[in-house]
Length: 117
Image (tube, rainbow, N blue to C red; front, side, top):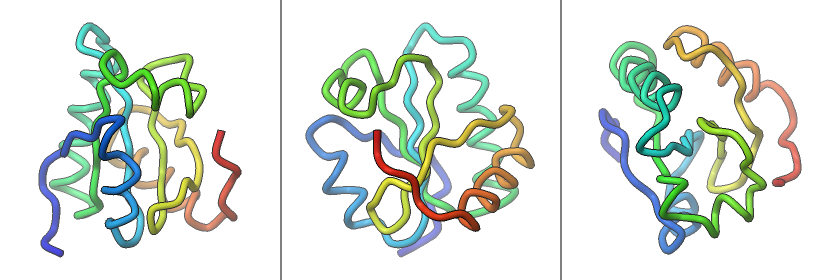
């Protein structure tokens, strides 16, 4: 699989299928069009893709994909989740800076997976 250099979109309809087909670690970013903090995190994730890792990053519009928002108990945006081999690993909480995102991923991968919300 070639290195991903941009953020791809996921929806309620393709979320699980795409993640199951994605080997290794992947980030899933829940956002909304009018969310300033979401735009800031998206810019940081785009920089992260170019400077730190070819890790797949997926974006889900929380406004138009309420099934996923409800299933994952998302109450605050932005929300950033780490998946490994298609399975939920954990929610990442970090500053919207490429180095902080990288560190949060490395730390999370050294820990056992958490239960999906």
